[in-house]
Length: 128
Image (cartoon, rainbow, N blue to C red):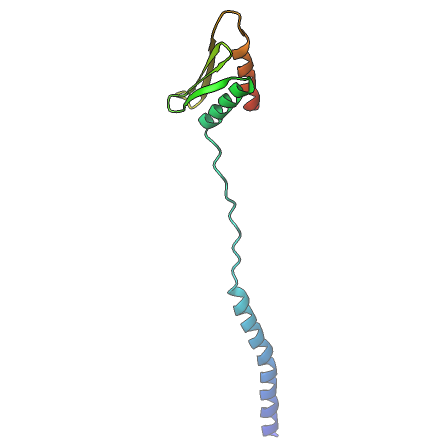
């Protein structure tokens, strides 16, 4: 009888060992799986100067100005529309703000509202 109880005890141990072993292997496999979440990549927004520069050139072209020179380092855009010479100065101020000045020259009365229209086109492009 003693031999019989050892056999039953071993059989029970094997019956319990199989599911325990299966769970142990399963836990090792699952714990080895790592899922990495993608990191969102943000493109840096254009600088305030770059945005203002692009808006100034676009505004001049919107109003029919033929841009003849762009000197980004000096912050000067020059162009013409008919007999009018247009100059746009884009400057970064000490506090980080960007200042845009639009001026025009030409025969008196040729197109007195050109600078104002370029200014309004610039504001639209800047979302103002």
